Image 1 (cartoon, rainbow, N blue to C red):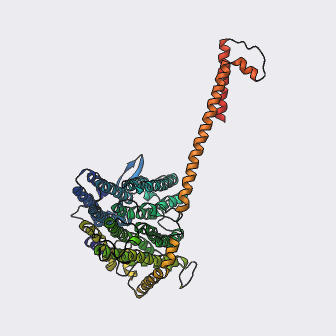
Image 2 (image 1 turned 180 degrees about the vertical axis):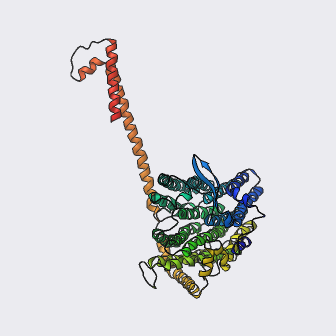
Image 3 (image 1 turned 90 degrees about the horizontal axis):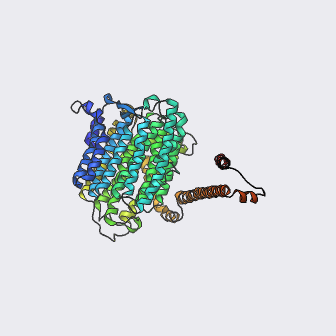
Length: 604
């Protein structure tokens, strides 16, 4: 990644030898899908090799694009509608670069983690649907692959069995509902615009905005719609968690930008709230993957804050949101890899049972330090650059000024930053330093180390050579001229956050432990409530149907008895008369009675 991206900062790679036509006519997700099928049937080593090669092609292809290749490619019709299966612009290209790079590292890590062939095959088809969503040039194609992402990621969770199965069902319900709501938004959009193409309308039509925000918000982990994140991601195979931790939520952020390219303060403030909410609940966790899952929500909050401010601050905010997206894919997966090594070697998923492992697993420890330094925005690492861009943008919004000339949004992001420092001090302290090691696990396997080294190297490189990071963003020239991430002010702010994080964790360690045993997230209420409401609806509908069925059968039986015993029926209603009639008239009377009964039943 270092060499490939470095070429972008100095200008796009020469594509004449690669063949520009080939680059824009080969949908990369098709190659990844083929590799997924082969990974299932071929020997494990060969299958993983082909998977890594296919995802590496996604990266190389995206790096090789230059602006002359931008635009819709592979335009066609689908279900009678105009669609574009391969759309290239600054944002889809950026997503292709980071998804392709990280997926390659994740496949290598999966091989080193003894991931079964089926798991890797499912992970690759999940990656293929992610890449297809990224490169979609219309809402119809996007929603098809969006739903395929939900299906494949659910299967990836289920594959592990055990506790992952029930969590996978809840995951499927969340994403099924979210996908249905987004589909409704797409239909409403088409009704207003009469086209699914992105070029027909800037963003989603206003009439579909609320549905789109809610549908995409499920995958983004909006507050209240987020509980599937910490519920699901700690359950599957450690290698599956690496794939899951970055693709669904980051693709959702990208799609949210497609829907709302001008951003909005609602999005920015929601992002600020997510940064605080996710960091706070992460501090209460002792399951390491659950802690990391809450920080997915928190870090998505910074992305939404940047994109949300695009229409108010300009290019810096938008670039900051997408730079943080790219960086988060790298360091979040890196943290899941490092913690995955500890789980893989110890079988323990409670950090209180660990401690003193920095001597026993030095590779995992160093990799963890790189990931923690990146997510907490320590100078010299990639998160420092992108988080600084977002926080700087928020400082230009002076609504609800509180202190230090900072508005509410700026303070939310600062508090989220302090909470992030505290969280990763806690995770590192309990895992690697707390007490003395009572076990002697082996360190990372060679292929786990290679996968982690790729992501760690990118985190360091993009932090030191931040011009390369900015070269991947739109409006590169403006950003290079205006941004100075290593200014005295930024370094001072980072030092203050780091100090507050250290002091905060050790000062609040006991109170946080007390709160952790007493405070639950909203799923403690919503999951039982949905279960009992759902169970009540099923029982209610079933019993109502049974009652209608019983009533109908009794009515039919009464009609049959009346037809067979007309004299007795007449006497029961007080008519004491001789009933004589011919067969024809009798049949007519019975038919009329039956028809009237049916008609009354239909009207009722």
